[in-house]
Length: 407
Image (cartoon, rainbow, N blue to C red; front, top):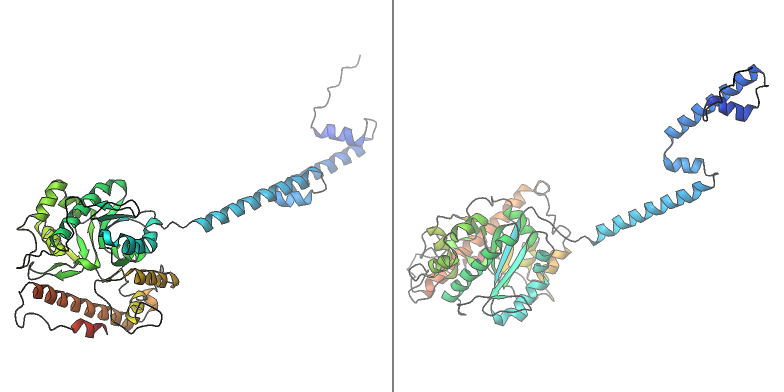
């Protein structure tokens, strides 16, 4: 009795031979040849599958019914992903900076519909589009549109009551510090245009972990030895500086600021807001550092046709040494034109690299700004001392020097 023969396992070469070469009656040489051919074809197919990418395989084996549909689906998915990526890139408008700035704007209710609206139509949009900054507006009266918080307990004059408004605004700013990762608090008026990106560039040159204030320094030297901050161009406090002046609590800060003996008062009784705050910084041993690019004065230049901006503003806007940060004493129409000029500049957010600009030209531009700044501080000393009957013969420069330097 013959022993039963084991059936070949499915998937073996012997099975493939039997399926392709026939029964056992086929001569042995034929069986060997068929096996060799099958082995060769199997190896070739393996190498081919390993070498070709999926899309090439789809083309190579497109004679198979299922392949064209699969490849079409793949291409559809690829197209969808590409379109989605492109759409995301186009619609992204947020500019994220390395640190946050909380801008504190002081205003008056008579300016809500004009100067404040012009601010919201221009540089405030750049604040809103940033991923880091915020704008806090404080006035004599509350408003929902535009959104303005009231400076409770303060009046409306430009002297002692403005000092009161500054104190309340800084208290409100201190309350909002926990709502964002703010490294700086930037105080500004409603008649100022501010370039957000340039402010970030220049502030990055200062260490926000230090207890410092930055701005135009040198005003009110007759009331504060060495002078204090000239508030019109704006000034900034580091977060640690803000925490230091508020260390005893917000009511204690306001009392310290508004103490009659602490106010920077003239003989006629008027108090300068910026110098009063500078005196508070001095009492807290907070250094005030010079920050270039703040135009706290009106610029004088040749008038341009159909434009509210003269040639000096256009030149300053396009300047890279120093970068323009703020322009004071600008009306709503000028704000919009300044903003439009910045928008039209190809390099408004990418200033010309210094290595591509002649060294002598940079030095000339910096020297021109320094001359204007020195004249502004000198004229501020003249103006403030003149208003207080403190003027002494020969102690201050003659009027008009700034106009000559900026011309």
